[in-house]
Amino acid sequence: MTELLRLKQANEFIKVVASCGRRFFHYKGFVSSFKLSSSGNVYFTDCYTKCAINTHASACSDEWDGFTSGGTLQRFVEDLRDYIKNGQLLRLWYFCQDWGDGFRNPWGYGEELEIVHKAASNLGIAE
Image (cartoon, rainbow, N blue to C red):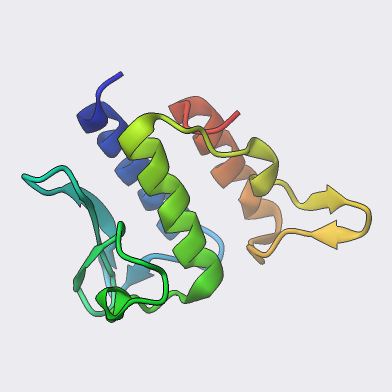
């Protein structure tokens, strides 16, 4: 599978995440998205600031200025970047309500998390 196909799948997945639950990556009708630069870097466009963020920059770098979704979602964006670049699948359990041993997921989506879980599985971006 090519980077462009994985990019398309990641963008479809972001749309699902933005359409339900707490609607992460959505702001006033704008949904965040990924794009590939001519040099092959993955950029993430933030839904609030509309800044294009180089996801290959260090998490502590000023290059993440303009990212408004917090550290947990930043790591999620990095995971999607890795999927786009090299096909590294996300873990399907990450989109489950109960992680076991009394730990619950950080999504706060309630029952709508099942929509995200199914999308991750159906799009083939998680195992």
